Image 1 (cartoon, rainbow, N blue to C red):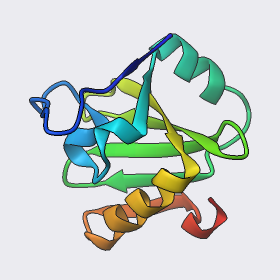
Image 2: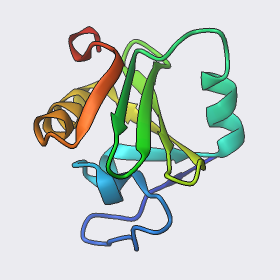
Image 3: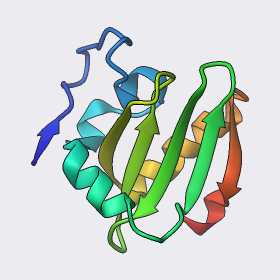
Length: 115
């Protein structure tokens, strides 16, 4: 089960914990996944490829490889809710580079150059 995030130009409230409310990515570039599917894909023994944290917002992102070209991003909100998104590798890396260049997010585990 999945659902597309709202289209370009449509903005979320920021209170629902939408990935695109805090990250520099086009909503059309991500696929929202159900919690059940996301937790099943990321819940194994494999550690994330990359784990980044925003201390000020108390939010985190963990990136897991799903296929050679697709990643699952787990977004953990300040209250501990988890949301999952599928993102093509070609879209993910530039998004993460921009995110880390902003200075609010820091890498806790992994390396961006391995994505």
